[in-house]
Image (cartoon, rainbow, N blue to C red; front, side):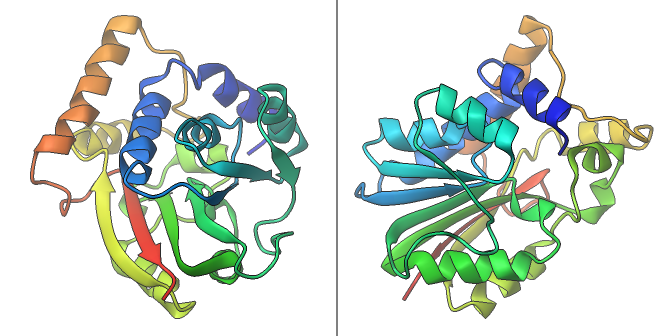
Length: 231
């Protein structure tokens, strides 16, 4: 992702429906855990890092981009610049490692998975969110610097290959998938991350939030969310 896209994403992060609902998702999944030491790998502007901090975690964000790291640090978050393929942290030093929409940017995602497992303590948790389904591949992915979108079996196999036990893997942003698929048929080169009218923004948040009470998590979505534990 180039610096212009990074700064655009940071400016949208507080209001845009997608970021807001992703923060709500992280909060819902992490709240039951006992706070400890956490690492947010590929933290971007730090929106999800802040969620962990607010839940009582001693959290560090790791970010490769100097622009994104600067934005997160400017928001008062603890940030380290580094490479997700070679994390600058000791073995078994983290209780939680979270990566939201980062693995798809790295060609060698196996190295990222191995490093996630390495720095987790026994009993530590991994939370990984990635874009789902190569049938949704479009100019949006190209503009954001994606290398791939994931299929469920592929993601599970990758995580299990590094010795983590998958607790569950669910789809997210399911109800809006047909809309995204139709739109992306005509999208050749641009990111979809843009300002949305407040009324539309609120409606889209309602659509995503409705998934919490509907038994549809096994259906295809725009994203996959995986939770794993280190045995």
